[in-house]
Image (cartoon, rainbow, N blue to C red; front, side, top):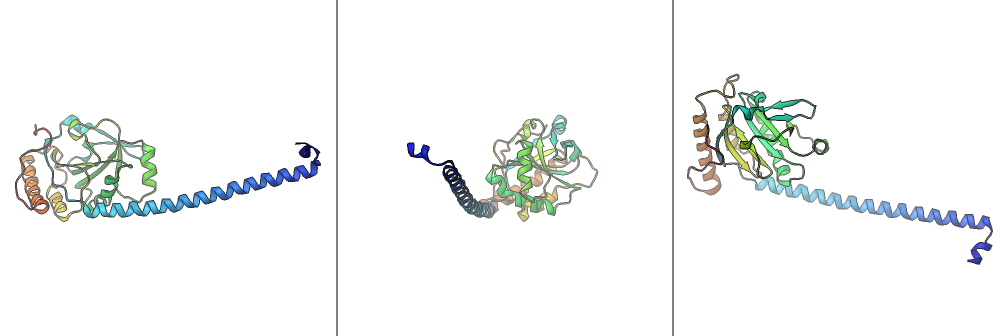
Length: 253
């Protein structure tokens, strides 16, 4: 200790400056090394995620889970927020076939099926088909996710609790709603939505423009057409033909 006290101030100052500089340089080098290591790990992780997503997409089956329910007039008032500040409701999509998907940014199966939904949406005319992708996460969380990706899908966030008939039990969950307000399909889990058979089935549901969401006398024919599609997909996926008679959800009222 005495030796440090007897050291001339000039030499002590030089020593302190050198020691401080060394510590700073060492800290910077360690920081840069850690960031480089993190970037390498992140890139490897992103590559693994892309590979897993590709595998998931390749392994997705076409949807074929039937549902038999109808939306009530009060269900059509369900409010959806848009990222430009505007709000919509299901009533705004009157007369169109509605593809309603519940998803989340943290849900890997949700992300895996997004490219197939985007491909499907590109093939469908927007005046006859409405695609609604809803997240219940914070708006800023979804904004950050979308800023990192180039999806052209219409994304919304739920302003209020969805109608009981449209409540998702898992993520992702997707509903297909006919132009009469009939809930025709419910898919719990990811699916390959751009499957040609499903695409043709979806096209078969459209009605002439301007006929209205609650058009009478067509619901039963939509259910029958849905059953034909489901039977075809059961043969395709399971190699068997048996028309399903058990439908999730309430009977149409």
